[in-house]
Amino acid sequence: MTEHTSARQDKSSRSYWLMYGALLIGLATAFITLFNNPIQSSSLPKLDVYGPGAESELCQQVPKLSPKNKKVEQFVRERVDSTEYHQEIINKLSGIIQIPSESYDDLGPIGEDDRWNIFFQVEDYIKASYPTVFQTVKLDHANKHGLILTWEGSVPPSTAKPILMLAHQDVVPVLSENVKDWAHPPYDGHYDGEIIWGRGATDDKGYLISIIESMDLLIKSGFKPKRTVVLAFGCDEEISGENCGRPISDFLHKQYGDDGIYLIMDEGSTGIQREFDQSFAMVSVAEKGYLDVGINLSSTGGHASNPPDHNVIGILSEIVVAIESNPFPGAVTPKNPMFRFLECAAVHAPVSSFPMAVRPKLSMAAQGDSVSQEQLAQTLDDMRYYFKTSQSVGKIHGGVKINAIPETASTLVNLRLAVETSIAQVEAHYESLVGFIAQKHGMLFEGFHSSCNSSEKRKICLFGIDALEPAPVSPVDTESFRVLSGTIKNVLKPLGTDNELVVTPYLMPANTDTKFFWALTKNIYRFTPVNLVHNLNRAHTTDEFIRADEFVREPLFFASLILNADDVVTL
Ligand SMILES: *[C@@H]1O[C@H](CO)[C@@H](O)[C@H](O)[C@H]1NC(C)=O
Ligand SMILES: *[C@@H]1O[C@H](CO)[C@@H](O)[C@H](O)[C@H]1NC(C)=O
Ligand SMILES: [Zn+2]
Image 1 (cartoon, rainbow, N blue to C red):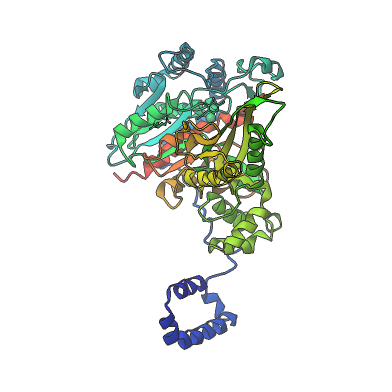
Image 2 (image 1 turned 30 degrees about the vertical axis):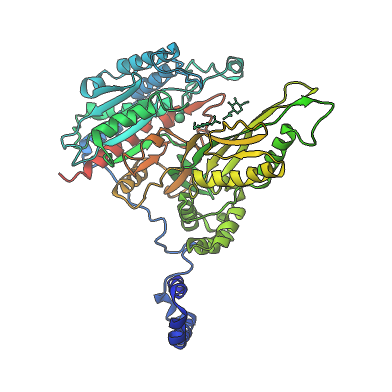
């Protein structure tokens, strides 16, 4: 209310003030009187909505959503509880881990580089493991190794938009010198009775097997979908995504068009976790952006006995210091899904576990107060990169000989963009920092949108590589988010002795293949339905593993989601 009044005051003109000033002062006095009156104040909006235990409209939780078709649900649940099924699905995961489908940064195009041929083995393996699925669904190939499985529903996709689940067949390579560091060889798919070990166990072959298994279970239950179900398996998520991720998206876009998909599920670096002594199901509804910045310097060389005061190595050092001395500021703003997470924690976490200092500032930050937004980011310093653009100087190169003045020097900086920012803003920041140093040293400056090809000898050039804007934030006030939340509540359990599993929006600092799918739906959710406290995420490093008791239940989650999404088709 106060916010609304002040906004109107901003717009008012001088004459308005002269005419109505007295009236406004009167109103303000009345307002203050009202506000200080404890009896009346309950009719005003609660200013302490972030207070402990506040009966708040923030972070509203939906009830458990259980599929209407009890026969199908029971079939799936009984199967998932059986020992025979546990053996089978664990063997399937172990078997696919044994195919080392590594993707390499220097892979040539599919069809030219033979290293892609390993993906034929993955496809054959999936087909052999799921004969029922492949008798039922239509299989399409996008650029040879992108696999698209379509289980057609009885209602046309124009009326009931298909549900899409993504996974990738490729894994991060294991360097041969690191194999000895693994407790079990990375491509044995060793199962020790409790844990399945190996590259891809969590990223992302466990997810792949889980979603295809959910389809297998539903087909075997006799279920016939109204809403089309699509599974798509990329082959290069860990590199560019250009060889499978983009072709799959192009294929689906041709089929279903803009906004033609109901929701997308993909791997997440988030799942069921505990923060502030409360269990959360963290659904990533956005991803940070990405940018690699290259900075190249060149100058005239010469003999080291007659050097200039500053050569390109010195000037590049000055640039690196300037970059690190001018980090991007952090701010906790309502545009960031992490703001929703903090609201959820404020409302649902135990009172003593959520920092008291955060509550009043959240309320101010929600109203757009930039000082509070910055202070919050400082208070929550251990989570800082959820609230700011990160920058990391990753490579530096310069000089060939000790007695020669270097002619070139270069560096590469990796940035992960905060959701509120854009590539253009980050580029402008770098141009102003580096442009100033170029000017100081009398060098030509070529910014991001030049071609870096000036014939000038003394110059500094900036260029961007692998740029990706922050992902659009998926809305959470939609039917599809309620269906997902209700499914989570129904199937997954809180950790330890916690009473409630709170579903919360979250932010993913890394990127997934969903970067190609923005046009297909606004409803993109990155979420792994396992307890990440037990499955300490060792993706991309040694000893990647998944706990069997958690993994075997993943298909129940995906099958329930398909069923619940089918139940809301109103035909
Ligand atoms: C920048 O320098 C690197 C390393 O010397 C070189 O490989 C690259 O081609 C240069 N890029 C541009 C745009 O000049
Ligand atoms: C630099 O490249 C641009 C476009 O790629 C071209 O138009 C321009 O003539 C080039 N300049 C030089 C000096 O080569
Ligand atoms: Zn992955």
